Length: 268
Image 1 (cartoon, rainbow, N blue to C red):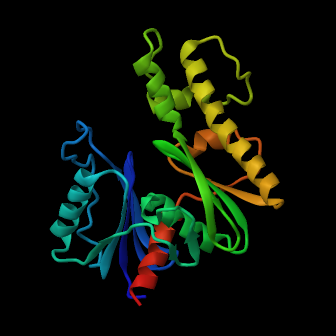
Image 2: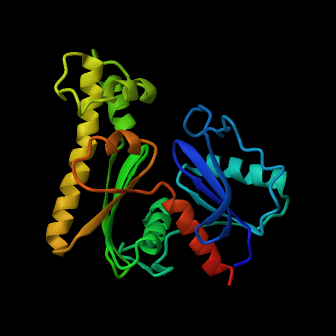
């Protein structure tokens, strides 16, 4: 490996980054959000990172699922700090870093999902894994112990569920994530069935998330006749975690970990 590498995970809600000294060894890392902008327009960043004091990376490795406008902004940000820095926007492929992609068209798998599979295979060697990521969308990935990606599920995320209800019904409010978090605090200690509309939306959407994950975990364990490790992460993982009734492992850095492994392999 030729450290350090700048790793960037650009999702629909925020961008995470890390400076990697080796696979799984991050000397510095952080996150920042997209500023509000109409869909299709060049988006700005709400609080872009100050990379001025960082050592110059050897190269940048990017997973981007937020669209071309965001990628253009990331490119400009990198160019501002380190002109001419080599950079690679990764794509899913048929086989990489011990993981085999079972998609009929491997390149159509999201780069974040692909990197997270690679990160999970390295983090939990020899284990069957179900990865649940709670972001704008909730994604589930079934990964066999031999590194075969067996397939996945995609559903609206917790916040998106709540917003959709408010936008498409006449009498229901649109809940922001912060207020919804307050409504679900201690929900397991009190009764889930509530007598206030905002709480009902928040709790109902939350249980929809947990129901999806728990059903998928049970079905996968039954189909594979094996113990499957459930690994969760993402922006809404805290809320979902306290409502889950099955065992799980928390890991919030699978995409960045996978990017580091890809960078190390490709840099050889």
